[in-house]
Image 1 (cartoon, one colour):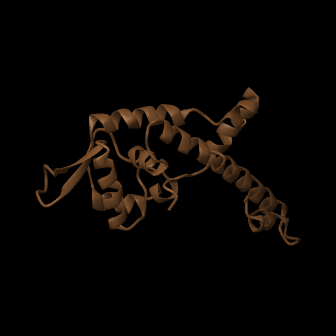
Image 2: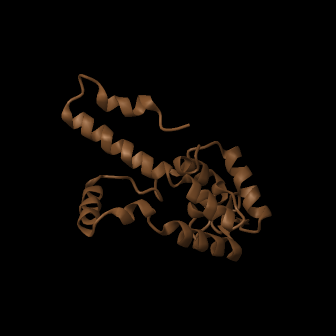
Length: 169
């Protein structure tokens, strides 16, 4: 099982101009780099006694604020029942708890517990190091790559519903 041939073939089409070919080639490499880290994410999670979904759920919760399950569903671009399942699991593990909102008694917010904060921090440390593939680049190449990627107008994943992508949904 590998990378879809149809995906890489997009830039090989006879009618594809150079810009399209280069863009597809760059995107394929970015996707391959991302996909190559899936096993690493699972290992970091397993080392903490978690699943990859548990770990990513912790990453998408802010350490110093509660959040409603509805807001999590919107942020993760998923069904609220799936959020309930995720939060139930985090509660069973002692990593999160539901509390009444201080501003609206009809709403329960999800907060990370001290154990959840510790697992989140350990996961950030474990997964926060750049992939070893980047170690093969020279300092000049790393500077160029960082400069190019900084030019992309990418949404802030902490503020938009990109969590579903990271959660593999």
